[in-house]
Image 1 (tube, rainbow, N blue to C red):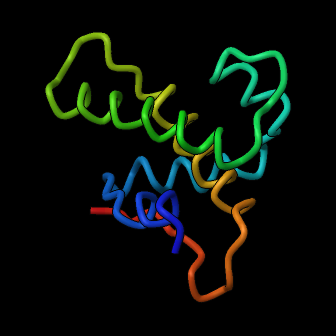
Image 2: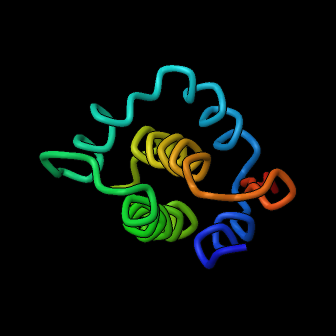
Length: 103
């Protein structure tokens, strides 16, 4: 597995966040959503997008765990949707496809 795939496979998030993100994938639009989430004019390659998305998601996860008042659950779900969708674009064999896990 690639380093990004390993990071994704190691993520453990609450079941409700994972379920919401899986549900939201059907409406995911790479061009629209990555521009909005990453504040870029055009979506980068999946590897570059994933690296930035995972960094931002880690910050939100830390804020969630700390009970930070500025934490945004909707942004967190949006980031998880993008992470899941972008992970599917990584080159992989079916046995090594990264999956997020619920805790």
